[in-house]
Length: 196
Image (cartoon, rainbow, N blue to C red; front, side, top):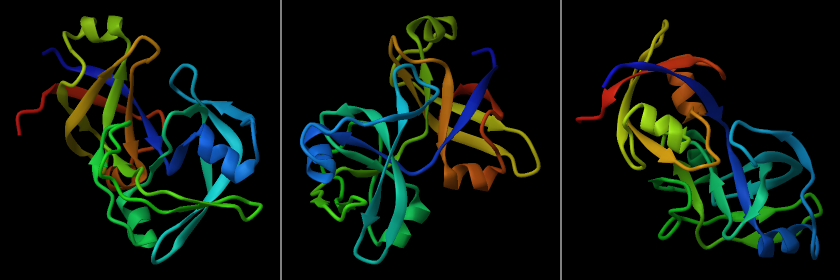
């Protein structure tokens, strides 16, 4: 594989919410209000925020992302999970079976108890089908990405995600970004498929 540059985006703690849980927290037929678009087409941050309550602590002002999804998915870093007192697995988005739960608290004091849905997102690169073909990649491939800089390194097992509404973008969480000393819109170099 010929190396190529890829843009990086840092994904902070957030949640995707189901219709049922949104209604329980904010009222029947509540509609999320868009704050700003994010890197992937059709996805956006909402003005609405919740508090995450775990066995050992809480995280306030955690932003909801729209649009509404079939199942609520809470994405945190390992540092966040330690503060909350939960031990979520590293997973791809949507793979929620067997994940851990916690409590969601709305600004009005309404609660939703999640039995599952809390995860640490596996690092991944979004590609459109055309972008994936350009690099001879298919959905589910795993790549190694070199990060340059004072605290650089190589990220292995970066999962390729291909969908028609995706655009090329590498997503890492705040722990990974801090460890590597990177900021939003930094760049990495895809150096090949992961072999480790």
